[in-house]
Length: 296
Image (cartoon, rainbow, N blue to C red; front, side, top):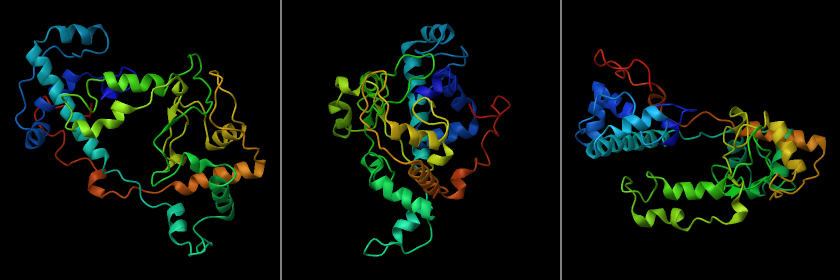
């Protein structure tokens, strides 16, 4: 939920989101079909949130406890609806998948879905470069956190990464164990038992490599512009400002670096999602005169 209220991202507030749901006939109807009757939502102030600038905080202070609960409940349910939609955005099969699926029993190439350079890159990926140690499984990620010596964002101190992140997650009012969550306590064991030792300072989550060629710039703050420079970074494995790097120098030749880079483009594929979920609903934003004409 944080990006919706973060000033440098959507720069909205939970009250403004709740007001949008209440004022738009389509949103309100769809909301009530899923979550039940919409509670009364105050029409003023314009912005209110326990987070953010003075305007948001002043607006939040002006609401009663009941109003704050109603606004936060609607805001939380909007998050659940967004999460349900995002789970439909499933990556489809890439050239890499077709190549793997058509290997014969001896593991020999049986198709032409990859170029020779990409095949060589794949051999490095699972061999000398050991990318597969972290980028594995269907989404090409182990979902873990690692410090790989990524340079600091210009003008900022080194990111604390998972060390601070797990603490923030445990304190977050929208986390798995929150009263606002639909999850049972047994579904939240990762939050309860997540490691938070000092060696996680600067550790960032391993990203998926699905469609990675389309997601530049790279690393947690966009510090690296392109995939070639990313591969060069892991080839060198420099010591970070925190004097730690789980990755070790690979000693790849220039030709091998470019082969590994070429493989990254073989992970690109269209979404395996019904077309209707990639189009805006025909009736959206077609309510009353007070309805916003663009998404928040």
